[in-house]
Image 1 (tube, rainbow, N blue to C red):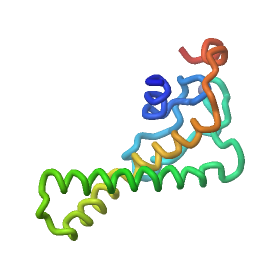
Image 2 (cartoon, rainbow, N blue to C red):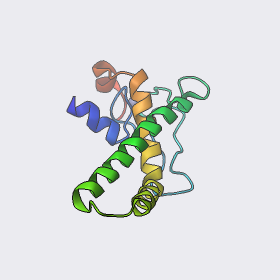
Image 3 (spheres, rainbow, N blue to C red):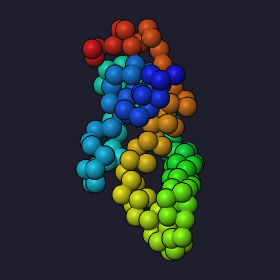
Image 4 (spheres, rainbow, N blue to C red):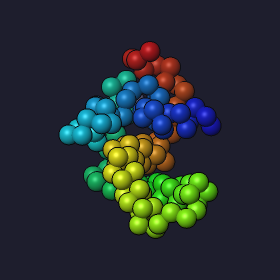
Length: 128
Ligand SMILES: [Zn+2]
């Protein structure tokens, strides 16, 4: 279970857990969402069907709601008398800063819903 979650967070191929899901770093703002067509280690295609990652928008929405609830809860615990507009501004700011991270994480979660790990593929792929 922890390997599965670690694999999602580290953006590795769901099939072999070795190949990278993205070609660039999260804060390379021009290319942060670019993915190779397939895994460089096991050749698992990353776009399973046309427009495959549209579904990742649902995951992204859930992550944004979780972020919103976290920020509001943190404010309620730490600064209960703070103005609502400051809370909203904080949520917008944190969302803007974490936008590339959330997009990448939602894509990683989405592909992990549909492609399962294969120990046999992992042991026989060309990456170590
Ligand atoms: Zn792979």
